[in-house]
Image (cartoon, rainbow, N blue to C red; front, side):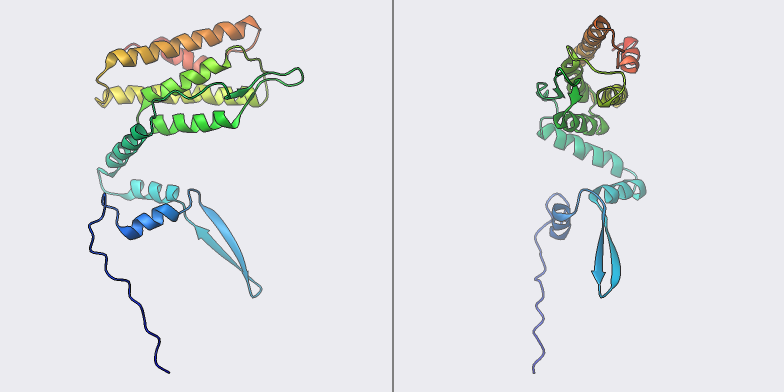
Length: 224
């Protein structure tokens, strides 16, 4: 019997688009965002296969790559975020479930999605854009009520920390020379300060504990 013909894939001589060749682009398109473990039972044996995520690969590359790879990565991330309208303020109507007779206010999935967007934005060095998102979240809490312990109080404490991180990212944005419109930057800061004051007044009106103490302290002495 003649040997089966071995089919060879023709060599792709096209230039790589954006320095990503066809094979790597195929990997990126199909790799899992998260690392996970698959357990397969084969003839009585358990085979454990670990699939590494793009996240773990990117972290390893940035940690071990040549000098300049981190700035190149963050520049690419900022460019992508600008294309996806990172500065657009999200709808606030569904960030929290309103208080009912038998249940206090509570966070919704839309809030968690919005926080993920804010974190990716300030994490890429676009602090002022993320402050706009977080300011909208603060204003969405005005008029709500919650218990001192519970999911609502917990997530508000997390948001307080996020605001602090976004403020630090904004300061680094200025130090890096990436802010040219200081008038708009001041408006963002003043809007955040105003939202925090509105929240503080509202919470004190019903005897609650103001959840954004650290953010309020951080912005109090921040002058642009």
